[in-house]
Amino acid sequence: MENVGVLREWFGRVDSNHTGNITAPQLQRALAVGNLDFPLSIVQQMIRMYDFDRNGTMNFEEFLALNKFLLKVDTQPEVYPKFMPNGKRKVQNVFSALERGRGFLPLDDVYAALVKLGFSLDSPAFYTVCESFDKNKMGMVRLDEFISLCIFVQSACNLFNSFDTPKQGRVTLDFNQFVYCIIHNYHP
Image 1: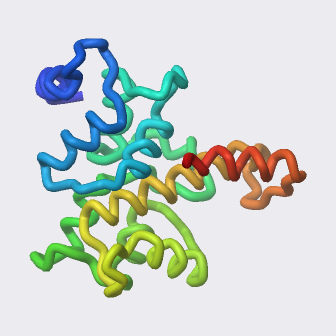
Image 2 (image 1 turned 90 degrees about the vertical axis):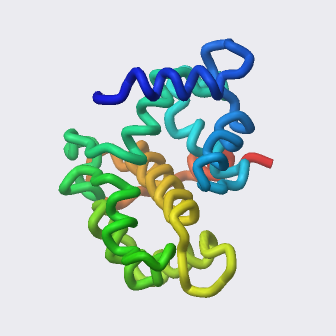
Image 3 (image 1 turned 45 degrees about the vertical axis):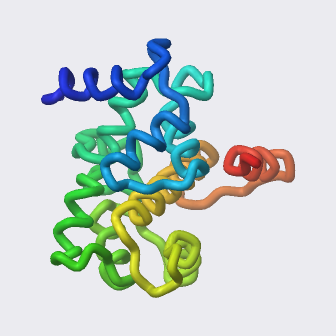
């Protein structure tokens, strides 16, 4: 990956304790410097998505995986056969291509962006998700809101795929599995 040195330098500055790991508040502050204002709950979800060692923080390798999700094309579309047929495209690039200098995407463009990223949601699911991430309830989504929305949809996709082992696009959950899903996404 190009720019690994730049990313390592950035990570080192964010890792103010020099532990080799960054916490959600450290990542949140660093993203805010770049005008990406995420609630702490979304930053925590970003870390959970790529916290491969499950220690609640993000090391440099895990950070690279998050960066790849946000900025790079995933060349392994077989990981998401039902939901990501073309592989993941650059989240920020898709937003920028549709934003046309407005600083936001109207909901029709949010839907088009999600389709370009390979996500497929029906109308009720799409509008429910948008309603949750449109902070101002104006039918417009800014870049940080769009990234948050994509993090949520990707997390949901990952969780769904963990239960959809035959890759049929349907799952049946018993109560214990349902509780697992709820607690996996609920963090007071």
